[in-house]
Each structure stands twice: as structure tokens, then as C-alpha cells.
Amino acid sequence: MHTVAVLALDQVIPFDLSTPIEVFTRTRLPDGRPGYQIRVCAEHREIDTGAFVLRAPWSLEGLRGADTIIVPGTATPAAPLAPDVRDALRAAAKDGTRIASICSGTFPLAATGLLDGLRATTHWIAADLLAATYPDIKVDPDVLYVDNGQFLTSAGAAAGLDLCLHMIRRDYGSAVAADAARLSVMPLEREGGQAQFIVHDHAPTPQGSDLEPLLTWLQDNLGRDLTLADIAARAGTSTRTLIRRFREQTGTTPLQWLHRARIRLAQHLLETTHHSIERVASQVGFGSPTAFRDRFKRTTGVSPHTYRRSFS
Image (cartoon, rainbow, N blue to C red; front, side, top):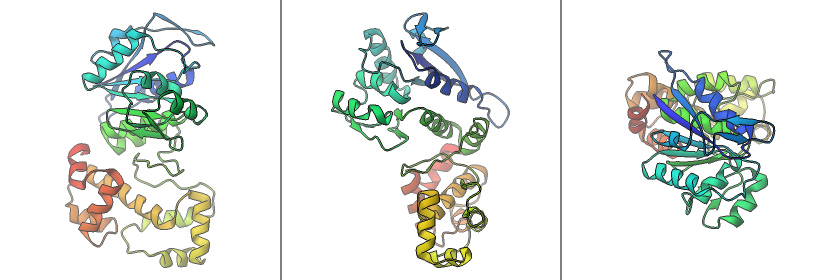
């Protein structure tokens, strides 16, 4: 079982602290077993959150042996990081532990030096302060989260949910992540220009919008060779109007939406079937397996074969 240690620092933000606890505790594998066990760790036994005092069941020793450490945000991001906390995080990183931050939790993680030279994010209101305090970090204030492999950072509040779901998908695949998202009443993909790799069987549809019937039709016809003109004809509008409506209601273009939906379906097929790569390519609307492999790798960062080996 995957162990997640949540590090509660002084003045921890209760929402940021509870997010990984709730999401990971409720995650279940296909056979019903829990996917994670949680440790809430702290430097001192009692932590002042501002609203209440938290009694942590684990000391910093609980960080040892964890597969993932999560650093929630604090109300005092510029506060100095205690040397024993810094050393514990550095030791965990040296052992290969995955370390993620939520909201202003990027600040204590940055104070360890582990993010130097990497791209990172935090709550938009604190992004300038992060960039000024840690100039060796490439701060991106426009994304929900950044995944550097071993080190991950997220923006504020609900972006912590996006990050947790992303890590669940990395650990156990899209089906488990989809179930976790449903329990959290959380969409698996939020538009906004950032690359999202939380995968589900059906692409998100703006409920109640006038595009909903069209998006449902597209989802049901991903295997067809569809052009922009075909989609516009189905919508009964011009291509220019179609593009404008897509931008307004989904934040992307019709063809970009279609490509992402096809890759999501391909990921599901790679996880749940033994179909050949060529057959999967055909099922999701790519006439050429080569074009499919290229699009898949550009979207997910790995080849279809590597993805299947990792998540099947």
C-alpha cells in the first residue's frame, strides 16, 4: 500500500491539510482495497492552525519510509523553515520520496532548495513573492499544478484536489482516479490552458450549455474521421462561430478538444484491454498508428507502449 505523509507545519491552512487526507483516504482500488494509508506528521505534537489546535499522531519520524510527502499551505509562508524540518525533507528527497506541495506549501518546500532550477507554482496571490524570494525557481502562476516527476507543486485551494487526483492517476491509473474524483464531486479536468492528465472515460461536458449535445455526439463518435467542417455541420453553424463558442464554453478549440478526448479514450483502452496499438489507434480515430503514437506521446509524455506497461 502507498503511504502518504502529510506534513502539518505551524499555522497550517486546515483546508489544504484536509484535502489530501480526504482524497487519499477514500481512494479504493478495483478490488475494494484502500490505495493509501495516511500519516499526519508534525515537528511538534500540537500545531496551531489559527482556528484550532491540531494534535498530530506522528512526529517527523513519520516522514521516513513514506512513498509521498505532502506539504500543505500555511498562513505564514515567509516564516523561516525549522532546520529539522528542512533536513527531514532533504533526507526524504535523497531516498527518492515523491514530495508535493499545496498552495503556499511551495514556500517551505522551496526553502529546502529542492525546487531550485525547476518550474513551480503556488497560489497566484503569492506567486510574485515566491519568485522574489527564490529566484532560482521558475515560477508559473498560470497553472493548477506542476509535475516535475519527484517534486510537484500546486496552486491554491481546489488546485490541491487537482494535484491529488493527478497523483492517484500516476499511481493507479485513470479508473481509480475517476472514482476518487466522483467521491470528491470534482471534475477530472478543468480548462484554463494548463496541461491536465487526469483521465476518465468521458470528456467533461459543460452541463446545461448549448454545446452539451454536440460534445456528447463527439464523444460517441471519436472513432470517425472528423474535420472541423464536419463538426460545424453537425452543430448547424459556421466554423468561425463554432470555434468562438468552443473558446467561450470550453476554453479550447473543437479539434483540440477532440484530440484530448481521443487520447483519454486511448488511455482507457490501453489500461483495460489487450488490443494492439494499431487497433487502439483506429478505435480512437487515428488513421495512422504513427500519428497516434506521436500525438499520444506529445500529450502524455510517454509512448502508448510505455503507458500500457505502467498503468495496465
